[in-house]
Amino acid sequence: MLPIDWTPNNKDRMPLYVQIIEYIKNKIRIGDWPVNYKLPPQRELARIFQVNRSTVATAIDELIADGLLESKIGSGIWVANNTWSILTSPQQVNWNSYVESGIYLPNFPTIQEINRSEFNPKNVRLGTGELSPELIPSVMIKSILSKLPDKIQSFGYEESRGLLYLRQQLSHYLKDFGIDASPASILIVSGALQALQLICFGLLPKDATILLEKPSYLLSLKLFQSMSMQFSGIPMDDEGIQVTSIDYQKKHQNTSLLYTIPCFHNPTGTLMTEQRRKDLLALCQKELLPIIEDDVYRELWIDAPPPAPLKALDKDGRVIYIGSLSKSLSPGMRIGWIVGPEPVIERLADMKMQNDYGSSSLSQWAAAEWLASGLHQNHLQEVRKQLKIRRDIAIEALEMNFSDIATWNIPKGGFYIWLKLIHPVSLQKLFKAALDTGLLINPGNIYDALSNNHLRLSYSFAALPDIKNGLYRLSNIIRKLSDRNSW
Ligand SMILES: Cc1ncc(COP(=O)(O)O)c(C=O)c1O
Image 1 (spheres, rainbow, N blue to C red):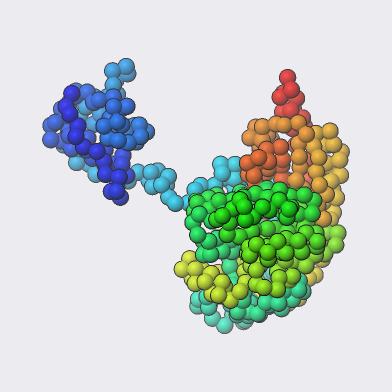
Image 2 (cartoon, rainbow, N blue to C red):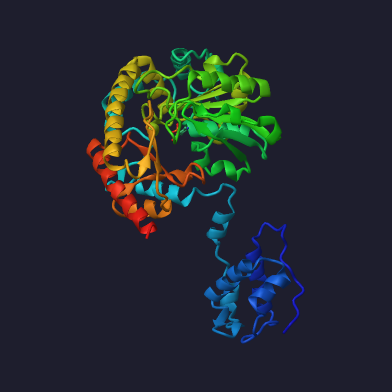
């Protein structure tokens, strides 16, 4: 066997396995490795090349696919061909390797499946965190849209903080919640999710630790793990995040901020009490800890208006506040906002310009006209009425079908019921078994790896008869799976 005194270069932009392919091709081309030459075993090649075995395997597989090498069962890999045309054929781009080496991590497979399955109209969506199409005021939105052509003053880019007219409307609208925000301290974003991206990537160092409720919506997003951010989950009770469990200084040297969803929390539906809000703010003041308040569910109260936002209680610019029209009006508009100290807003606005040159001008005009029209409050009254009906029907269906297999909270608003299964079942099996029968659910472990006895149910999306019937069918599937477990 011929000696190999070459290793691929780690610093080269060309992936290691491509360098190996080129090396082997060259050996064949110059005749060092003639037809019928037997290559060293893959384990040996990996050792010589100082790479993982899988890297060698990928290179060998490609060369086999190109017809240059051949695998003979039981006797290894051989050179099969040294035809010039094969050797000179340009190596095709292996997009898979690029896809795998991108900086952003892919979504959890379950979330990818949910995202796909939501668009199968046959599925009953028992976990979707969105208003049902029948609760979106399409006629009213269309009437606003029809008037836009006369209102829009320019179809160019908007200024970096977003359309001034929309920020003026928001400044006015936020006063109802006790938030005093000038248009200069508001940044328009493409939904609350973009707000979170801008805040985390624009204000935090790479190794930052974010304190947050456990479970949390943020834990379902791989995006932040992609940038090496750490999360530290704080337990919750029925008043919200447990402030006494925040042992901030001792445990988290790199802790950079606290993220919270105080109103109708995703996924638990919990409403943080007024006292808890005060305690949280006091602790964060003491520890000099900034707060990101994600308040996208605030307006969706069912029983009584929620306590004032942390931002309204904040007297020293500690809180960065996030809102959105996604949950209360239309997620498709992709309009959200950030309220914060002006230097923060300026920094995030600069990042947003680098990202997308601003949110869609058409959506911004539509949102501004919607808020200016006064239709929002009428619409919200109707949404609250309908959410109450939906919540009550869901709770009734749970009482009828789940009382021996689960426990749950009764949310005071928002979309979610955090269902806890009494007998453990594999959430993966449950997800699949439910989907096989056309029921789409959100397993709890996408919001916290340890929440593997929970489901996030939503009563906001499915039609009323589907909520009733769907929950009945789901209870039977759970019973069947947990019966099987106890065999
Ligand atoms: C707490 C929370 N924040 C942000 C978002 C994202 O909202 P948007 O559609 O405004 O990006 C969601 C959506 O589920 C959410 O639940």
